[in-house]
Image: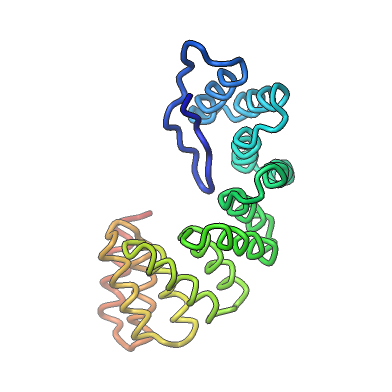
Length: 226
């Protein structure tokens, strides 16, 4: 059976159709994934809970239930699920990453950074862990560390538009407006449909004394409206 594993920020369903010969636990797991995809979060939680009752060491069920609980706003329950999954699989980077995302939502950036760091230790090429840690460090005002993390994201994934945009924000906080503008140009080149990229570049243009270009970017952002 091909299981559906849910990772930070979104619910991804690759295959959730019950197949002949599946165990009872696998059938609940498949139905839980379908319910999560359709927005029936309570139903998904109930089914993942049933999987756990049938197999108390099912790491994927704890992970997925944690993500569904996160999406419901049950951060305490999500933390408990990810922590249990980590106890069973301490080498799995994604579990620390998922728990770190929840800690950020709980306004615990230090705890989130600790989890992102553990994810990186387990998987040194995990661009998402560097990206999230860079954003958390930026939120704490640790500009050089944030810059370093976002630069590492770009090394691992040169097409990561949000990494360019967020590194541009860090550079603006460093008063390095010219190089910030370079990053924001790259962000927009990677995806010209994100209004925030134009708004950020408008700020860089104003800081560099070019209100005309700033106004053009502000108008572009308004047209996109997202």
